[in-house]
Image 1 (cartoon, rainbow, N blue to C red):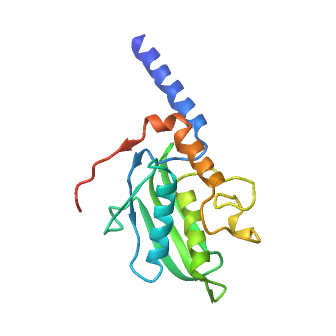
Image 2: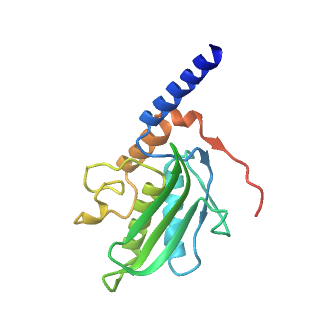
Image 3: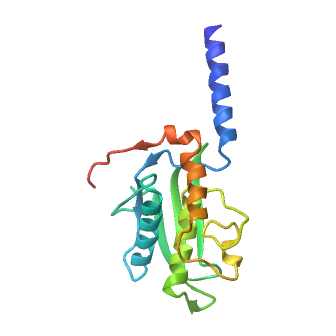
Length: 183
């Protein structure tokens, strides 16, 4: 009888956790990131630093020298239809690997540095599992690439979305700061 009650309790907690999060989240920080060398690496690193700094220490990233050991892997593609895409790999409610592809050019035209960084900021929001908003004019806008004017820095509303995802939900209790050994 105890095993049945324990199993039912575990199922109830698991179901409640799944309902609480519509998108998977990271359960640990710092998240290891791989940024390829090249002329766009600086913009990607600036975007990562902006998210980390403006989160007031809630989220953090650590550079990885290897794609294999990284949790978020950035790639810079030549020419594409959109400035960025994110491919999320998750187990139930937790992320374990995210691939972010950022385009160097769209439609044969090289993206200006500010637009490339804006795309990086938006794709990092996706990589963090943030629930995107309908409001226009923000990095976390659902239809970011369709906006007439795309912001190129985080605003208070973007940080509110981050806070709702990580600070204001019970996941904050499960986030662990992990000590990684040197690579």
